[in-house]
Length: 225
Image (cartoon, rainbow, N blue to C red; front, top):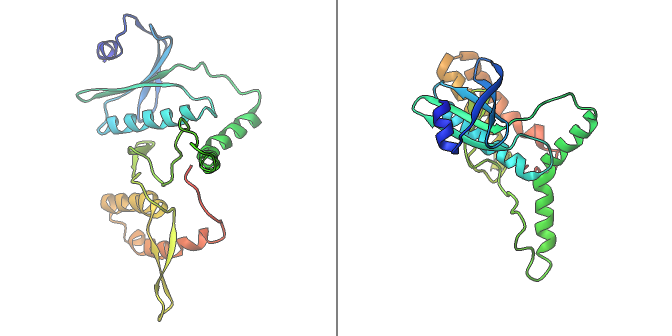
C-alpha cells in the first residue's frame, strides 16, 4: 500500500516512524515524507473506503472553518480492498488551556450560523460579498459519514424535526420525519432490526417516534451547523 501512496501523492520519501497503533476499525502510523510528516490510517475492512472518504470530507469541512485545530486532510486512497486516509501529522500533547479548546469547539459549531448572519447583513449592501463563503441552509452533508464503523445517512433535509397537523377533526399530529429522525435515528433502528429482528425494538420504536417532537418544542429554531 505504501507504493500506492507514493504514486498517488508523487512522493520520493515515505518512511514510517514511531511504530503502529490502532483498534478494531483501523490502524495508523506516522511517516516522514516530502510533504512533511504524515499520519496514515489503514483498513482492509469492507466499506472502509466509504468510512475514509467521509472522514476526509468531514476533516476538510472542519479545517476550512479555521476555528479549531484538526489535522489537514490530504487524500483518501484505495487500491482494490486496501484503503487509507492520509492527513497531516500532529504531535499531540496535553492542552494547557482546555477551556480554550471548549470555546474553539463552540465556535466551530456556530460557524455556519455566523455565515448565515453575514450573508443576511451583506444582502443589505449593493453587490453584497461576492467572495464570502456560502452558508449551509439545509441539514445534512454531501457524502455519507460513519460513527466509528457504522454508516450515517446524510441526505439533505430542510428541517431537523417538524411537527405537522395531520387531522384537525381527531386532533392527531404526525411527525414529519426529517434529518434527525429519518437520517440519524430511524436509519440505525432499521439496521438493528435487519441484523437482530428485535421484537421489543420493533414495538417500542413507534412509541418513541411519536414523542420526539415534544423534545424539541421549546428549543426555538434549530440552525444547520
